[in-house]
Image (tube, rainbow, N blue to C red; front, side, top):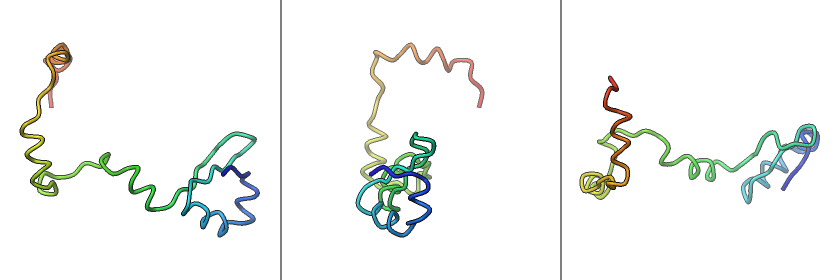
Length: 86
């Protein structure tokens, strides 16, 4: 759904309800300016992009990390980090 910012301002509750079903694009000067989404969708979209402590990871995730490796195809990336200081 795409609406103007004026429509949104006049019917905030209606579009908040609509955003529970699918994103609502709010336009300004004819271009999408803001997108209103449900809290559930927002959480889903950012999950995994949030840093977590090791203690917050489940056992399967910890095992997957421990058993992971980088393909030799990407070995040249090590050169980018060789002089990096923490």
